Image 1 (tube, rainbow, N blue to C red):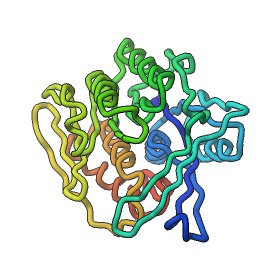
Image 2: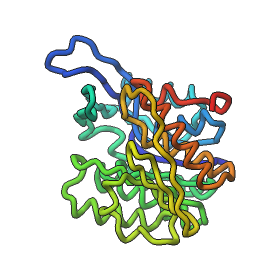
Image 3: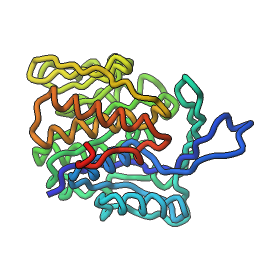
Image 4: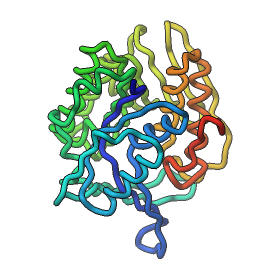
Length: 290
């Protein structure tokens, strides 16, 4: 049985200093669901990924990475004639990276409800979706809804990470409506401190809510109790991927039957590992390293 089924847009990412001056850059692949899938696979969990890539070199690289990390890519699709999406990320010392999105008309943004294998989603232990994929357009949004509907029908646990990216949404109001809808459908909710107002209707005592508080650590409210973990002091190379890595650690511990406090602890370990390297996922630990 698949432990976690997830769907999203895998991307290429070029990281450099300030683009107008930098002479060197680094090429990698990324995406919130890709990072989570790789992190879970490295910890020994069976994870399946649904997405679309272009019939180009970036798409081939995405598939090579996922296969190499042991992620189930049986449902991945290659769209000839469409490009794989790309991010251009400028690293800035002491500040959040600046990211430009080149994903309009990309293969990954064309994910649709018809691509969602209802039976495979319904056979998983958990479905994980994010607000990033829901922001890519109505087809991708409906694909997320189709997966969530299949999971609810089958009694599969639903994990949702808000992952609000303002530049991907037409308006804040539309983002609030869609993100709140998906948050209310979830059993496990991940969000940042600054996203609390976006999904207020979902912040009920019955839901397991994990809040990333940045350098202050993280908090979870589960079974009407609150648990906290402090942020780990590590050298920060690039904070990209930390939230997805944290969620993967938390989900991994939940699948292992650990307590909320232990889930936070594992999440913090993976989040710390993610920020110590230039890649969103390459520095994540295996089960033995954990």
